[in-house]
Structures are given as C-alpha cells and as structure tokens.
Image (cartoon, rainbow, N blue to C red; front, side):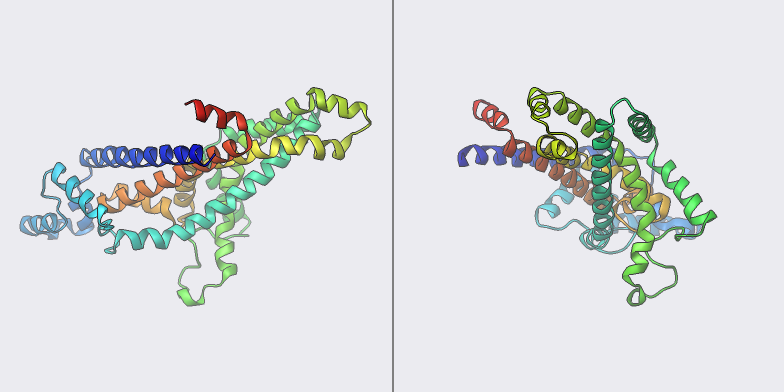
Length: 330
C-alpha cells in the first residue's frame, strides 16, 4: 500500500516539475514575442523626457538588452537559488508582491469556493428530489444560464445594481479609499469582498449543481434504493442514508478539480472590482511588460491549479479501490 502511494506521489512530483518547466518556457517565449516594450511601459508617460542613453541604461539595469535565451537562463539560475527577481512595476522582490496579494486572493477564492460548493450541492439535491417539476426546471434553467455567463459580465451587473444603484456595497478596491492601513477594520475588508465573492460564487454554482443532480438521480434509480423504498424508507431519511453518502465525495472532488476555473474567474472579478489580488497583479504585469512578476505569478497559478487537481486525484484513490487497483497494474 505504501509503495503504491509512493509511486503515485512520485509520478505527481515528476508531472509537477515537468509542468512548471513547460509553463516557464512557454510563458517566457510569449513574453519575448509580445509587442509590448518593457522599457517603454516602465517609463510610462515620461517617454518623451527620457533620452536614448537613459533608455539603454534602464534596459541594461533590468537585463532587457540581453538575448532572450540569456535572459531566460539567468532567470532560471536565479530561480533555482530561490530568487524570483524584482518586480519592475512595484520595485519590490517578486516574492513580496505575491505574498502580499496572495492572502487577498486566497480569502476571496476560498470564500467563493465554499459558497459555490454548498449552494450548488443543495440546489443539485433539490433538483434531483423534485425531478421533472417546476423546481427542477427552474434550477436547470438557472444553471444553464450561469454556465454561459461571463464572469466579468456578472461582476459588472452586480456592481451596477448593488453598488451604483442601491449603494449597499462599495464600488471597488479591497479597503476604503483614503484610510490608513492600521485603521482598516475586518468589517471594512468583508464589505469590500462581498461583491467579488458573490460574482465567483454565482458563476461557479452551475457545474456542481448539475453534477450533483444527475448523480443523485442515478443513485435514486439504483436497485438498493428501490429495495430501501420497499422497506418503507422515504423522504430525508432515504436521502441521508443512501443518497448523500454516494454523492458527497464526487461533489467534493469536482470542487477541487475546478481550481483552474476558480483562478481564471478570480482574475476577471478582481479586474472588475479593482480588488488587490493576484489576478489584478497578473493583468498589470502582462500589460506593462513586468517579466519577473508575470513569470512568478504564472508559476504560482500553475502550482495552485495542479494542487487542486492532485487533491482531487488523491480523494478518488482513497475512496474508490478500483482506481488504486488500476494504479498497481499501470
């Protein structure tokens, strides 16, 4: 058993290393052929005031005058020593920029992940129990509509209704504007996080709800459930004893496997609400040619998504012995 788990973890580690290498190469190649001039983006509006010599000094300071292969080799060498480089936008080490914003993004994504999972699971259970009724049709219509709704559009809609028209929530940012950091309260942070969280949660409900509905319908149509009905079980007792136990784990693993969609949605939501997280930093780094920060964020996002998928695989192997047997013969 321990040997099988060791092989499984070893394969996962090898795939992670391979993934990070390929992501680094592809990302650096795309940045190298990008039409964005990092020096011009670094200078900004003062472009006409900077001489050609000063431009050359800036390019030399950041290593932008070297050939792309040499730049990549230097970056990889520094990365192997734990140095992600310095951000051209924030003038700080990339690790500090990521760590400062990672907490904000993590809280946002974790909150929306939990809300979407719980609400989606409940809606899926209700739709399955009320199959072919108006409740089931309404939930399916709701989920199919959300599945085709862009995250940024939903964010703009919530922003317009609840922030602009009703004035219940702030228009954006992660904290009140003009307030010192030590004066910001937990309530202020929560208030600024509600709309971005709702945006990600509402969009993320559809997949888990539809999956749970179909899974529970299959379970309720199985022979052992029919036998339980024959013994007199019905209602919530039948659902609790024979339904929830068979659909809870697939729903959880599906949630872990949706990390990539969650991160991609967070990027758009943070842009709409100007929320200071990794998503907003990624967009800024890409538009302003901040190569060190962009590569660091890409590696972090790849690691984040891989972790979610790995947890999903571990849960499947832990519960389903058939997958473990397949691993032995692989």
